[in-house]
Image (cartoon, rainbow, N blue to C red; front, top):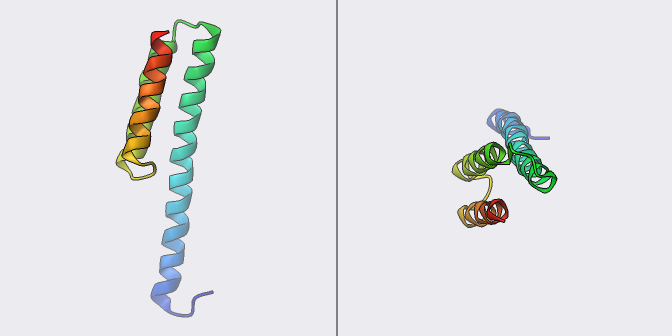
Length: 84
């Protein structure tokens, strides 16, 4: 446990950031899973879910939660899946 006041504040800040980051990553992963499930089931709403998943990936990349190359790779794979 930190003894210095600024270090104590930093611990609180880091915990908040970790929760926010985990939530956003979870949202991104859920959007991807929803798209994949809809696509394999042959639902008509797969195009809308692709848009939502792409947006979630872009948001995570912008916030620095995932690397830009991973974001591009994931979006490419989802678009490729949609085209099939």
